[in-house]
Each structure stands twice: as structure tokens, then as C-alpha cells.
Length: 65
Image (cartoon, rainbow, N blue to C red; front, side, top):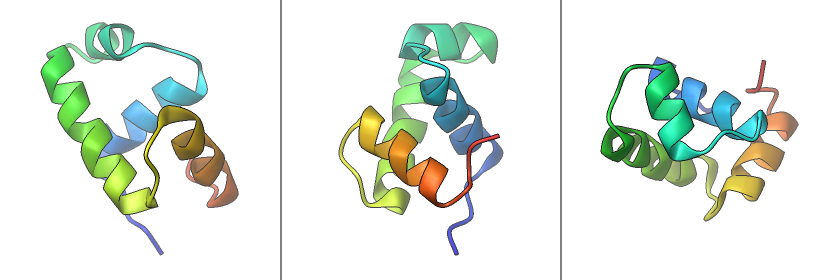
């Protein structure tokens, strides 16, 4: 099974709520560039290449709260 870091999980849950990268960054007091880094790692772990696929895969794997 896939283990996401706390930040990767926050990013995935943000995407599931329809938040943008700047909105996720503001919510967690981190830079948008940091969110982008976590997004790339998230995509690699889930084997996806975009937000919608990440959310779909996250739901399938029950990673979204």
C-alpha cells in the first residue's frame, strides 16, 4: 500500500475539495512552490499525471478523508 506524507495527504485532500495550489499553500502556510513539489511526489506515488486522476486514485485507495 502507498504511504503519503502528511503534506502529500494535505495536498490530495485540497485537490479533492477543489482548491488551487495557491489556496492549499495559504491554508497550510507554505509556499506554492512547496505545494508543487508535494504534488509531483504525490503523482509519482499514485502513478498519475494530473489532479483529477490523483483525486480519483486517492478515492479508490481510500486516501481522501
